[in-house]
Length: 359
Ligand code: SF4
Ligand code: FES
Image (cartoon, rainbow, N blue to C red):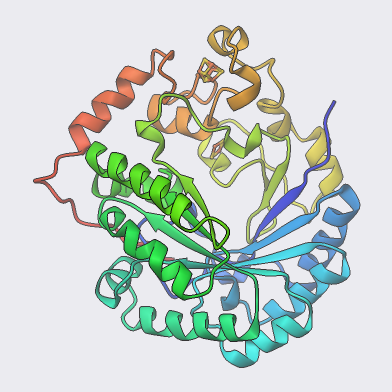
């Protein structure tokens, strides 16, 4: 039986003042003139609520790059959705934050690129960004918004994890999500520059363990370790077409943010067809739904209903086969390919140039 989605990620725009090399947006970004209008998004939010979606993540790019962000948040609230704004903070003034609070924005997830201006501005590719972000964080705290700090970690900043956790506490975050870069979308071409070393990962796990004990009751620490060093894959999207749906800036409906990297799948647009029909009957949503598509290795595995065979886009990126077992899995023949990649790419003495995201 197919259940309705619980969460929707709305990529309102691919425009962004930052140009982080780890961006999860696709390598081919959508231009402003192809973005959905306010009225189209308003209709999508109503359809989503009707379908059963509870949580809406307003994302991008930078969602505050949309001049109608307050109107869109208001429309989502009126549709009855819980709204979470995923933002770099750049473009959010005190006045805009107050307007967002007035229309009922529920939660803010603020991304940080580093603990000092030097590293944050270098990674974000935006001079002065760190300072502006810290001002926004102060406003968020003063206004009492529930805040999650979203720290994307990689080879260049993973050693700063203790200071990153301290920073989240200082900014009044109730939760910090320490997410090691997932190599999809734009980030994939920076894999060798951003992939941390095994020693960094071991140290980070210890930092998280210690900090969880130290700050218990004060702040929740979520940790997404780097996939490539795990023994088993993550349950990507909690299973394809099971609980989450993504909408791109031009209204294309995707089972996950990187699904367009899988050739041969046909993705439909919510401007052409009702969301409900796409979710239940869309060819792309049914391609890897459930367990029938799985290779025998996963079909007969005791973890089949835990990780659902892992990530289809990762199998595509590493093995060129979206139907294969995720190569992170130690039972998979693809694991050898992943290990060879790690050995080849993670060399402390070589620091490849970062390729910054650009529209
Ligand atoms: Fe998961 Fe498939 Fe590996 Fe089993 S064989 S652990 S289901 S990826
Ligand atoms: Fe597409 Fe994991 S990112 S299935």
